[in-house]
Each structure stands twice: as structure tokens, then as C-alpha cells.
Picture 1 (tube, rainbow, N blue to C red):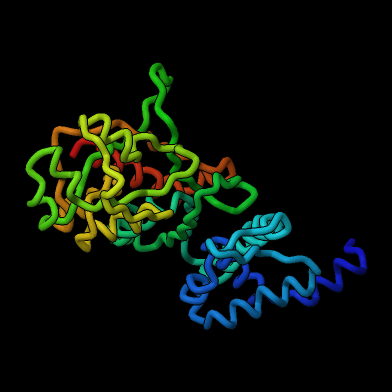
Picture 2 (spheres, rainbow, N blue to C red):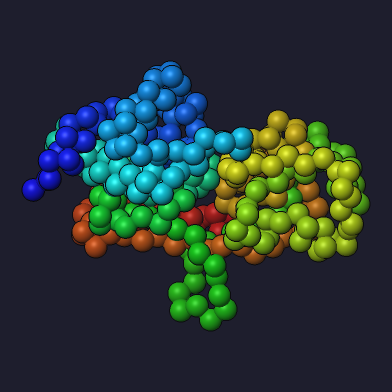
Length: 306
């Protein structure tokens, strides 16, 4: 049973405000949240303010480098994210009792660059199955958050009992017009670098200093660099001719096949993370989940071959 203060605070929190806060917290941007929810930035700001007033605590720190969550904001974000996910699953089941649905969680990059473009193919194969994609860097608890599957990346170690479905390869890519200016490794020094900002250094194969050392080059402090916190933005900038990027297969493969990007120095590749599919214990026996998992495994296996 809720205590009186909690009950009063909850009455002051609208579902729209919680959705606005969750989106702003996930993007760390009121502007991105407004675009996602099709409302104004001012409306998102008011929604967040209403929650802060109800709780008597700040949810965001607003500084020169953008938004960040306060400890209270992080706690509310985790609760809001889990609650909205469970609510969405319940609504899906109630509104589509005659249809099957599958909820999958994975990283934003994999969702945007590889999975989303392929879902039309799955829908053609299985028109009676709806798919909900949750894009997050967090390794969510599948059972608690109502998710059926997760596509996860992990470091591949020698002697692993089970090999990955697919292992990433890192390689250098650029738009065709930019790639045409690169005839040797030394030419890279004259091209702007598109940098995936990875402060935790989780992906050393995505580090330009490591690539320069591998290629026997000296990086100049005068070389232009553009930094991005989202990997898909790195590739978008590369497609637009902004410079040279470190590509990750399979994420970059659709852009290579479509001709928007070209491999630079084809002989240079580095092994990266492995791909693994995890199924919720609550969903493992559902036919729709089994079909979607089998399709994912086939598609990843095709990328490993080609």
C-alpha cells in the first residue's frame, strides 16, 4: 500500500509526462524527445518540470555539454523505462489478440543500421507476427521488462565454448568521392577523421590512434576530426562525404552494398565483438519468438558468409 506522500506524488504525474521524461532521458536531449513524440521542445520541458515539482528533486543537470541525469533522474528513468515497456507489451496483447508479437532489445546502432532495414523482409515471411524493437545500450533484464529476445555483443575470447553467430570486422570506409582520393595509407593523413567517441575505451579497434599505429602513420594535431557519441551518426557523416570512418560489419554492410560507402585499404581489417541471441525463459516456447530467432540466426549467418 502506498504511503500518503507517494500517493500524492503519483497523482501529480501524468503518463504523458513520464513518457516525455523517459524519451528525454534516453536521448539526453529535449529536442530529440520532442521529435520522437511529435510535440514541441517546450512541451517536453514542461512535462519534465511537472515531474520535478511533484518529486521535489531535479531530474536533469543542464550544463554547457548538454543534459545529464541526476541520481534521482537515473532511478526514475530505470523505473519509467521498465514500466512503459511492460505497459506497451500489455497494450499490444490486448489490441492484437489475434496477432502474435515479438519484443526484441538490442543496441541503437544495430537496431538502426542493420535490424530496421531488414524487418520488412521478415514481415513478408511472417505477416502475422508484429515486432517491437527496443534500442538501448543497457543490458536489460528480459523477464522484468517484458522483452522476448536480446541481440547482444560481447568480447570473443580464445577457447570460448560456443562460437559467436557472427564476429564483427572493423575496416576503413568512406564515400566513393572521398575514397577516390586515398591511394595509400599515407593519404589518410589528409582526410578528416570521423571519430566514434568511446570514453570507456570499450572498442579499441574503433580507436584512430590504434589504427594509425597499425598503419605505421603519425597522426598530426592539425588533422580535422569530427566526434560522435552515436555510431550511426559516424556512418551518416561518412555517407555525406564528411571524411573517413572506421566501419563495423555487419552494420556497415548495407551501405557498402548500396554504394553509399566504399572500403578504403581493403587489406586492413580487425576482429571486433561477437553477436549472440538471448531468449527470455518466459518466451522460449512461443512459436512467434522461435520463428523470429531462427530468422535472425539465418540473417546473421548470411552476413558471416558474405
